[in-house]
Length: 298
Image (cartoon, rainbow, N blue to C red; front, side, top):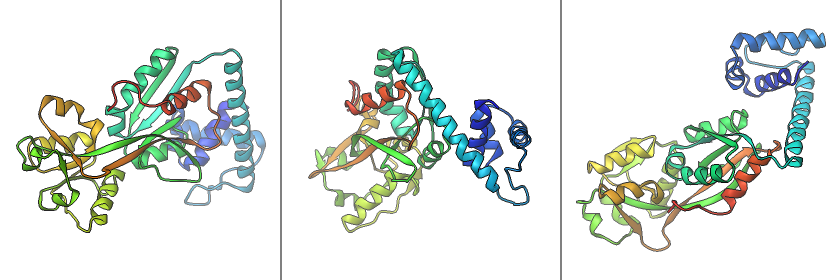
Protein backbone atom coordinates (compact mmCIF):
# COMPACT_ATOMS: atom_id res chain seq x y z
CA UNK A 1 0.00 0.00 0.00
CA UNK A 2 1.60 3.28 -1.15
CA UNK A 3 1.01 6.84 0.09
CA UNK A 4 -0.66 7.69 -3.25
CA UNK A 5 -3.38 5.14 -2.54
CA UNK A 6 -4.33 6.88 0.68
CA UNK A 7 -4.29 10.33 -0.98
CA UNK A 8 -6.56 9.24 -3.83
CA UNK A 9 -8.98 7.62 -1.38
CA UNK A 10 -8.99 10.69 0.88
CA UNK A 11 -9.65 12.95 -2.12
CA UNK A 12 -12.49 10.68 -3.20
CA UNK A 13 -14.09 10.83 0.24
CA UNK A 14 -13.74 14.61 0.56
CA UNK A 15 -15.01 15.45 -2.94
CA UNK A 16 -17.57 12.61 -2.99
CA UNK A 17 -16.83 12.43 -6.70
CA UNK A 18 -14.77 9.95 -8.73
CA UNK A 19 -14.29 12.54 -11.49
CA UNK A 20 -13.08 15.28 -9.11
CA UNK A 21 -10.72 12.89 -7.33
CA UNK A 22 -9.36 11.86 -10.71
CA UNK A 23 -8.74 15.48 -11.71
CA UNK A 24 -6.97 16.25 -8.43
CA UNK A 25 -4.57 13.37 -8.99
CA UNK A 26 -4.09 13.60 -12.74
CA UNK A 27 -5.55 10.15 -13.44
CA UNK A 28 -8.69 8.76 -15.06
CA UNK A 29 -12.00 8.26 -13.28
CA UNK A 30 -11.65 4.54 -13.96
CA UNK A 31 -8.27 4.53 -12.22
CA UNK A 32 -9.82 6.07 -9.10
CA UNK A 33 -12.48 3.37 -9.06
CA UNK A 34 -9.83 0.69 -9.50
CA UNK A 35 -7.78 2.16 -6.64
CA UNK A 36 -10.80 2.07 -4.33
CA UNK A 37 -11.53 -1.56 -5.19
CA UNK A 38 -7.85 -2.43 -4.78
CA UNK A 39 -7.89 -0.99 -1.26
CA UNK A 40 -11.04 -2.97 -0.45
CA UNK A 41 -9.32 -6.16 -1.60
CA UNK A 42 -6.19 -5.27 0.39
CA UNK A 43 -8.09 -4.68 3.62
CA UNK A 44 -10.63 -7.43 2.83
CA UNK A 45 -13.57 -5.16 3.61
CA UNK A 46 -16.18 -3.07 1.79
CA UNK A 47 -15.36 0.64 2.19
CA UNK A 48 -17.90 2.30 -0.15
CA UNK A 49 -21.62 1.62 0.16
CA UNK A 50 -22.54 1.18 -3.51
CA UNK A 51 -26.21 0.50 -2.71
CA UNK A 52 -26.74 4.24 -2.12
CA UNK A 53 -27.33 6.79 -4.89
CA UNK A 54 -25.09 9.34 -3.23
CA UNK A 55 -21.49 8.62 -2.28
CA UNK A 56 -21.38 7.09 1.17
CA UNK A 57 -18.76 5.22 3.18
CA UNK A 58 -19.31 2.09 5.21
CA UNK A 59 -18.24 2.15 8.87
CA UNK A 60 -15.01 0.41 7.85
CA UNK A 61 -14.47 2.91 5.04
CA UNK A 62 -14.82 5.80 7.46
CA UNK A 63 -12.15 4.27 9.68
CA UNK A 64 -9.80 3.80 6.73
CA UNK A 65 -10.38 7.42 5.72
CA UNK A 66 -9.60 8.72 9.21
CA UNK A 67 -6.37 6.73 9.33
CA UNK A 68 -5.48 7.74 5.78
CA UNK A 69 -5.71 11.41 6.81
CA UNK A 70 -3.42 10.75 9.77
CA UNK A 71 -0.89 8.99 7.54
CA UNK A 72 -0.98 11.78 4.95
CA UNK A 73 -0.59 14.44 7.64
CA UNK A 74 2.42 12.65 9.17
CA UNK A 75 3.96 12.16 5.73
CA UNK A 76 3.55 15.84 4.82
CA UNK A 77 4.87 16.89 8.23
CA UNK A 78 7.95 14.69 7.78
CA UNK A 79 8.62 16.09 4.30
CA UNK A 80 8.27 19.64 5.63
CA UNK A 81 10.56 19.00 8.61
CA UNK A 82 13.24 17.47 6.37
CA UNK A 83 13.12 20.53 4.10
CA UNK A 84 13.47 22.81 7.12
CA UNK A 85 16.40 20.78 8.46
CA UNK A 86 18.15 21.17 5.09
CA UNK A 87 17.06 24.83 4.94
CA UNK A 88 15.53 24.12 1.53
CA UNK A 89 12.91 26.51 0.13
CA UNK A 90 11.60 24.79 -2.98
CA UNK A 91 8.58 23.02 -4.41
CA UNK A 92 5.34 24.26 -5.94
CA UNK A 93 2.70 26.56 -4.47
CA UNK A 94 -0.75 26.26 -6.04
CA UNK A 95 -2.96 29.34 -5.82
CA UNK A 96 -6.65 29.81 -6.60
CA UNK A 97 -7.66 33.46 -6.87
CA UNK A 98 -10.45 35.71 -8.03
CA UNK A 99 -9.70 37.70 -11.21
CA UNK A 100 -9.33 41.14 -9.67
CA UNK A 101 -6.66 39.97 -7.21
CA UNK A 102 -4.92 37.62 -9.63
CA UNK A 103 -4.65 40.11 -12.49
CA UNK A 104 -3.96 43.36 -10.65
CA UNK A 105 -2.64 42.80 -7.13
CA UNK A 106 -0.97 39.40 -7.05
CA UNK A 107 1.73 39.93 -9.76
CA UNK A 108 4.00 42.22 -7.66
CA UNK A 109 3.81 39.75 -4.75
CA UNK A 110 4.70 36.81 -7.01
CA UNK A 111 7.53 38.76 -8.63
CA UNK A 112 9.05 39.52 -5.23
CA UNK A 113 8.53 35.96 -3.99
CA UNK A 114 10.16 34.36 -7.03
CA UNK A 115 13.06 36.82 -6.79
CA UNK A 116 13.64 35.83 -3.17
CA UNK A 117 12.99 32.10 -3.72
CA UNK A 118 13.81 31.19 -7.35
CA UNK A 119 13.56 27.42 -6.66
CA UNK A 120 9.82 27.67 -5.95
CA UNK A 121 7.19 27.36 -8.68
CA UNK A 122 3.92 29.26 -8.32
CA UNK A 123 0.86 28.10 -10.23
CA UNK A 124 -2.17 30.39 -10.38
CA UNK A 125 -5.76 29.50 -11.30
CA UNK A 126 -8.40 32.21 -11.84
CA UNK A 127 -11.74 31.28 -10.34
CA UNK A 128 -15.03 32.73 -9.13
CA UNK A 129 -15.04 33.34 -5.39
CA UNK A 130 -17.25 30.36 -4.47
CA UNK A 131 -14.97 28.01 -6.43
CA UNK A 132 -11.89 29.29 -4.57
CA UNK A 133 -13.46 28.04 -1.32
CA UNK A 134 -14.30 24.73 -3.00
CA UNK A 135 -10.69 24.37 -4.16
CA UNK A 136 -9.46 24.88 -0.59
CA UNK A 137 -11.94 22.43 0.94
CA UNK A 138 -11.03 19.76 -1.65
CA UNK A 139 -7.27 20.35 -1.26
CA UNK A 140 -7.07 21.14 -4.97
CA UNK A 141 -4.77 24.09 -4.17
CA UNK A 142 -2.55 25.21 -1.31
CA UNK A 143 -3.90 28.74 -0.93
CA UNK A 144 -6.89 30.77 -2.02
CA UNK A 145 -7.03 34.54 -2.39
CA UNK A 146 -10.42 36.25 -2.00
CA UNK A 147 -12.09 39.51 -1.09
CA UNK A 148 -14.53 39.79 1.83
CA UNK A 149 -13.51 36.38 3.28
CA UNK A 150 -16.28 34.21 4.69
CA UNK A 151 -15.62 32.34 7.94
CA UNK A 152 -15.80 28.55 7.63
CA UNK A 153 -14.98 25.90 10.19
CA UNK A 154 -12.48 24.09 7.94
CA UNK A 155 -10.71 27.16 6.54
CA UNK A 156 -8.01 29.36 8.06
CA UNK A 157 -8.19 33.05 7.09
CA UNK A 158 -5.06 35.23 6.93
CA UNK A 159 -5.94 38.88 6.26
CA UNK A 160 -3.26 40.80 4.37
CA UNK A 161 -4.65 43.94 2.75
CA UNK A 162 -7.50 46.47 2.58
CA UNK A 163 -8.43 47.65 -0.92
CA UNK A 164 -9.69 51.21 -1.36
CA UNK A 165 -12.95 51.28 -3.33
CA UNK A 166 -13.42 54.15 -5.78
CA UNK A 167 -16.03 55.33 -8.22
CA UNK A 168 -15.05 55.01 -11.88
CA UNK A 169 -16.68 56.78 -14.79
CA UNK A 170 -16.00 57.93 -18.35
CA UNK A 171 -13.74 61.03 -18.49
CA UNK A 172 -16.64 63.02 -20.01
CA UNK A 173 -19.11 61.96 -17.32
CA UNK A 174 -20.39 64.81 -15.05
CA UNK A 175 -18.99 63.07 -11.94
CA UNK A 176 -15.50 63.05 -13.44
CA UNK A 177 -15.17 66.77 -12.64
CA UNK A 178 -15.46 66.11 -8.88
CA UNK A 179 -12.54 65.51 -6.52
CA UNK A 180 -14.80 63.61 -4.12
CA UNK A 181 -18.30 62.25 -4.37
CA UNK A 182 -20.99 61.50 -1.80
CA UNK A 183 -22.28 57.97 -2.30
CA UNK A 184 -25.88 59.28 -2.34
CA UNK A 185 -25.09 61.22 -5.54
CA UNK A 186 -24.87 57.90 -7.39
CA UNK A 187 -28.60 57.24 -7.06
CA UNK A 188 -29.49 59.25 -10.18
CA UNK A 189 -26.86 57.74 -12.47
CA UNK A 190 -26.76 54.51 -14.48
CA UNK A 191 -24.82 51.95 -12.49
CA UNK A 192 -22.85 48.92 -13.69
CA UNK A 193 -22.47 46.15 -11.13
CA UNK A 194 -21.01 42.74 -10.58
CA UNK A 195 -23.19 39.64 -10.64
CA UNK A 196 -25.32 39.29 -7.46
CA UNK A 197 -23.27 36.38 -6.08
CA UNK A 198 -19.94 38.24 -6.29
CA UNK A 199 -18.78 39.35 -2.78
CA UNK A 200 -17.87 42.87 -3.93
CA UNK A 201 -21.39 43.28 -5.36
CA UNK A 202 -22.88 42.24 -2.02
CA UNK A 203 -20.68 44.79 -0.26
CA UNK A 204 -21.69 47.56 -2.68
CA UNK A 205 -25.38 46.70 -2.20
CA UNK A 206 -24.79 46.95 1.55
CA UNK A 207 -23.24 50.41 1.10
CA UNK A 208 -26.34 51.56 -0.77
CA UNK A 209 -28.69 50.10 1.87
CA UNK A 210 -26.74 51.81 4.66
CA UNK A 211 -27.28 55.10 2.84
CA UNK A 212 -31.02 54.44 2.47
CA UNK A 213 -31.27 53.96 -1.29
CA UNK A 214 -31.09 51.20 -3.88
CA UNK A 215 -29.70 51.09 -7.42
CA UNK A 216 -30.78 48.57 -10.02
CA UNK A 217 -27.72 48.02 -12.24
CA UNK A 218 -28.21 48.57 -15.96
CA UNK A 219 -25.59 45.85 -16.57
CA UNK A 220 -24.11 43.06 -14.46
CA UNK A 221 -20.85 41.20 -15.07
CA UNK A 222 -18.88 38.45 -13.34
CA UNK A 223 -15.41 40.02 -13.61
CA UNK A 224 -13.64 43.34 -13.21
CA UNK A 225 -12.33 43.54 -16.79
CA UNK A 226 -15.80 43.52 -18.35
CA UNK A 227 -17.07 46.07 -15.83
CA UNK A 228 -14.24 48.43 -16.81
CA UNK A 229 -14.87 48.00 -20.52
CA UNK A 230 -18.54 48.90 -20.04
CA UNK A 231 -17.62 52.07 -18.12
CA UNK A 232 -15.07 52.98 -20.81
CA UNK A 233 -17.87 53.18 -23.40
CA UNK A 234 -19.88 55.38 -20.98
CA UNK A 235 -22.57 52.75 -20.39
CA UNK A 236 -22.62 53.76 -16.72
CA UNK A 237 -20.56 54.23 -13.57
CA UNK A 238 -19.19 51.56 -11.22
CA UNK A 239 -17.52 51.00 -7.86
CA UNK A 240 -14.28 49.01 -8.06
CA UNK A 241 -11.00 48.49 -6.16
CA UNK A 242 -8.57 51.31 -6.90
CA UNK A 243 -5.70 48.90 -7.65
CA UNK A 244 -7.64 47.41 -10.59
CA UNK A 245 -7.87 50.66 -12.60
CA UNK A 246 -4.35 52.08 -12.31
CA UNK A 247 -3.55 51.38 -15.96
CA UNK A 248 -6.80 52.84 -17.33
CA UNK A 249 -6.48 55.97 -15.19
CA UNK A 250 -2.94 56.46 -16.46
CA UNK A 251 -4.08 56.04 -20.06
CA UNK A 252 -6.98 58.45 -19.58
CA UNK A 253 -9.69 55.96 -20.60
CA UNK A 254 -11.29 56.06 -17.15
CA UNK A 255 -11.62 58.58 -14.35
CA UNK A 256 -11.67 57.61 -10.67
CA UNK A 257 -13.28 59.65 -7.90
CA UNK A 258 -12.81 59.05 -4.16
CA UNK A 259 -15.74 58.92 -1.78
CA UNK A 260 -16.25 61.61 0.84
CA UNK A 261 -15.53 60.81 4.48
CA UNK A 262 -13.71 57.66 5.49
CA UNK A 263 -14.61 56.02 2.19
CA UNK A 264 -15.04 52.30 1.61
CA UNK A 265 -12.70 49.36 1.32
CA UNK A 266 -12.72 45.62 0.73
CA UNK A 267 -10.61 43.25 2.84
CA UNK A 268 -8.40 40.73 1.07
CA UNK A 269 -7.37 37.44 2.63
CA UNK A 270 -5.37 34.30 2.02
CA UNK A 271 -7.15 31.01 2.75
CA UNK A 272 -5.82 27.57 3.52
CA UNK A 273 -7.28 24.36 4.88
CA UNK A 274 -7.16 24.20 8.68
CA UNK A 275 -4.79 21.59 10.06
CA UNK A 276 -2.82 21.11 6.87
CA UNK A 277 0.95 20.97 7.01
CA UNK A 278 2.58 24.10 5.60
CA UNK A 279 5.82 23.43 3.73
CA UNK A 280 8.65 25.96 4.21
CA UNK A 281 7.84 27.65 0.89
CA UNK A 282 4.20 28.09 1.95
CA UNK A 283 5.24 29.64 5.28
CA UNK A 284 7.51 32.07 3.42
CA UNK A 285 4.63 33.03 1.13
CA UNK A 286 2.40 33.83 4.10
CA UNK A 287 5.23 35.81 5.72
CA UNK A 288 5.63 37.86 2.54
CA UNK A 289 1.94 38.78 2.46
CA UNK A 290 2.02 39.72 6.15
CA UNK A 291 5.00 42.02 5.52
CA UNK A 292 2.87 44.39 3.46
CA UNK A 293 2.51 45.23 -0.22
CA UNK A 294 5.63 45.25 -2.41
CA UNK A 295 6.32 48.09 -4.88
CA UNK A 296 3.73 48.22 -7.66
CA UNK A 297 0.56 48.08 -5.57
CA UNK A 298 -1.52 51.20 -4.93
